[in-house]
Length: 349
Image: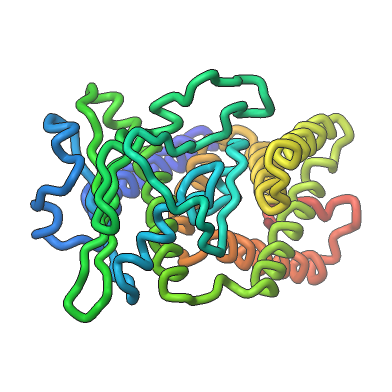
């Protein structure tokens, strides 16, 4: 009976997950590939398209900026790991030790773009001097292949950044990218991994360029502080589950080692906290669900993507959700009167 129940539960979960993936390919992926753009813009030809006439698929993403093209250009032209950053989620980039810092000011030394100039995506000694590159790799430092200030510039391998003037003095910021031909399985892997995270990062970059060009401030410090408390609460609940038995302490050491690695490579406390939390939640969930660990991982994958897709600020959204879950968990523990030694159940996470 138990085996049948387990088999039925597995089947139901897999059907739900298959439905989620089907929904993604039917609606989600077309939306993220062409976020904010019109059918006319998707069909139009933009600078840089000629560099890859044969392609697997292309992306066209756009939004309106309430500022003239020159103002939007001034911010977008500063992108680069060794320049103004990428105006996206630095804490997500720095989980991979990219050492990205986003600027909130226009710097004259970062305004110059030249044909052939490489735009670094990662440091030359990425990471921690272990993989020192003598020359910038085109993959990790795409060169400027076309340039017409303040209309457009093209980064070979990334795409074109277009600043289209609108009649009322505003700007249409449009990014076009093309993906080279690849096999069926490579295309599937690309669709489920790279496409989703690239969309999240590129969309956030465009939103922040819009915000900066319009002169609007970033999220207040106190909101980020509250979100940070949510990550701390998630760490606390995960640690309680992991340390319920002594032999599991090496997992905590592993998570702490990753935290220190992120701090050493990037000096980004926010990224270190996110990474520490992610490792602890994965370990705690695997311990809690045991044979169903794969279902937990898939569920967390879907959950994380939903937050990244839907939230205006993913760090704040994750933090507030963790904080709400932590408060709810503490309330349940209080009502149940669970002894101190057993308060680590991740069923309360």
